[in-house]
Length: 400
Image (cartoon, helix red, strand yellow):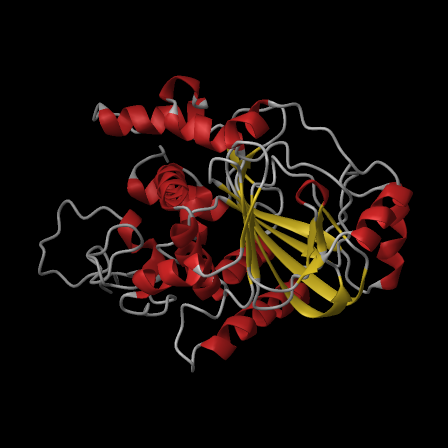
């Protein structure tokens, strides 16, 4: 009986990682996909999970931003980066004082440093602005579906102690069925240099699949956040994208990459999480976070004492903020509140751009590519999912 050849078909997102050295350009096999994955397609093409962007949107958004109320802080960006962060809110009485005295902002607002660099940008309904009328309701539905699908298969993990949750906020857990936080993507663990998947990304198989499905569902949302980020600070957007490109090439991020406008390496999802006064001390020194929410709730304003405001962040709104430079916390809320936070640690910029200080796992792969060594690169030192290892074997980056 003749032997039968079994040919495996992998999902299209894995195609670019399979070798095509011995295939002709006319071959329609899985080794030569007609639509390459992110960062390699021609201008004007969109990924399957993305939406078509408006023509001339960027010309319009510049005029839109120029009409927003702008306030100026009395310090320059360099002064804020060089100072030692010190909390202004150290007790529940001080927190209550700020909540009762600071004005609540519910309209568009831009606050800059004395030299004109954005510190905080609040866009009311910002997630809707880039899209046509028929697309606008779908943004919120994508956020709601992402949360719903994740909670069905992967309940919020038990959180370790964190200084960002003060003792006077610890009672919030008992008021909600779901309470906790997820972190997806890659980062550098505190006290280490290796770039590794976050603990919630590298869990059991069904949980890793849940993370992948979350990123796939959020692709139009991430695309929208990238559009707005580019309009607000193009220099920083380009820097984040360049860094993200390198991380996608050499880490597990490529399994979570569904929009060509993705530029943040880590995504946090805070489920009914009340955040105490803090600075994001591990984030990029002069970088941003992007905050957006979904759910049905009342309250939950983002309080920024140094800038003298508290922002009424609601579904469809988005905030860009330099969270390492500004103390911030959440006011109490009632209802179900799900917050998405796009951010990136400072170490990821240093590790991916400074070859000398890169972890061995990344440095080995880069040397193999740059110097075109005949031997495949050694296995990554950092934690890695089984699916990721299979992909690297198919690319020849690992020895069987």
